[in-house]
Image 1 (cartoon, rainbow, N blue to C red):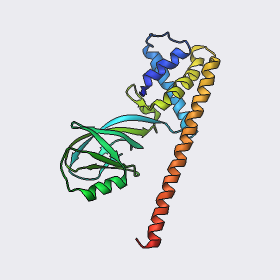
Image 2 (cartoon, rainbow, N blue to C red):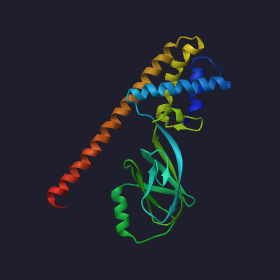
Image 3 (cartoon, rainbow, N blue to C red):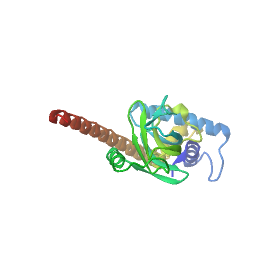
Image 4 (cartoon, rainbow, N blue to C red):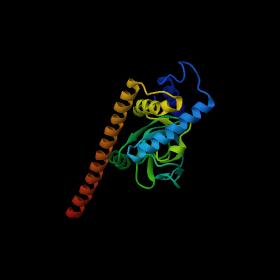
Length: 228
């Protein structure tokens, strides 16, 4: 499971012996840890290390399609990089891609709930949500969003599990001077290894994104040349 900012701060404090196992940090210690985390994330951002956080959103459907999500959209929030899950009171909603969505629209004339499918197009600046069948109701979304503003971190913001280790160990290194400590060798080593893992994953995501855009351009060019 993903962890909140406060959980990661407490783990970092335990790693350097600032608090004992089971001990609750003081209000000031948590605030200092949150400040150090913000500075750390700003530093990572300057190195083009992309981080994400998870957040639930609610979509009130009126029978329209598509709905927009992003700043000023139907759901006025940070535009998600992806939708990790969706559900209604009737149960989970299956996430599908564009081809599957178009096939479903061609093969059925069903309208009204329950909602069974959702295609998310992460267009820019507003993402596009295509539920099916169309109708009225409420859908709940598990969104993965880029962390563009570290000041937005609170105790309720959760991070994907793949970032937990890197944030814990690197925050521990940053907090050491504030507690008059030298970073333990194992903590420094883990900080370096886990951060390198995030950088590698980040690079792979950038390459995949470029490949996707190239494929889209190639498809458009092919259709133009064929006269489709």
